Length: 232
Image (tube, rainbow, N blue to C red; front, side):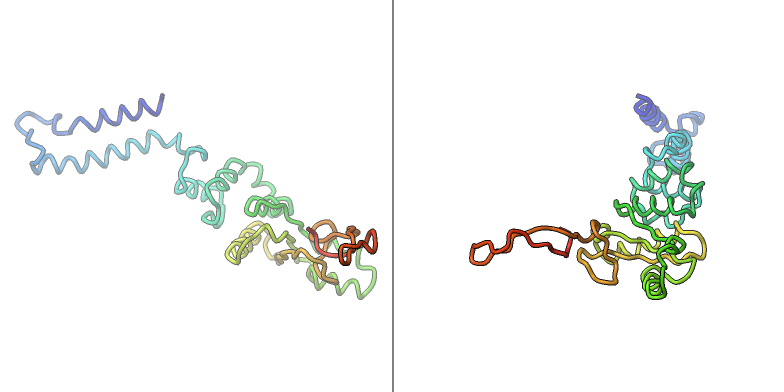
């Protein structure tokens, strides 16, 4: 109802030419130079008046277009606002007071990556590996997979999280923006198979202890066979 009243008010205002406020002697036809000259300033004035009147309403993210959303994102120092779609920008702006205090943390990075990909990542920090470094061989293996210095962070995602190289490139920007300064972000996209000494996680991208019948010429030879392989 309020928007309808504003629209009617706008139409009413536009229907009144500024020529009508001049003395009778200055009033001329719509083809005259004076009419067209005043019409320029009247149009600019009415557009600015409408923008000023509707600005409070447009500051609500749900009612804003992409241009306003990106402008609002600049108020909160959101880098690379152009990589987010409208729904994602609305979410970021509506949750800004909750997200700003946790910027630069693991939780913040998880939420940004989940927002962009729709999948929750596994984030492995260097310090979390200390208890698994029981010997030199295992230490070298872990450092090869997850980094060999305290400023390395590895983000592990399923292959369904990103579809193409463009999304991977944008995801790297999301990770860099979300991570603290001087942190090296490593991205690992899991493959749905087991590779020894590589990124294989039982129950995530592989399975262990599945059962299947072994048949030859429609005759079952062994009731069950334990398999180690890809996750369906």
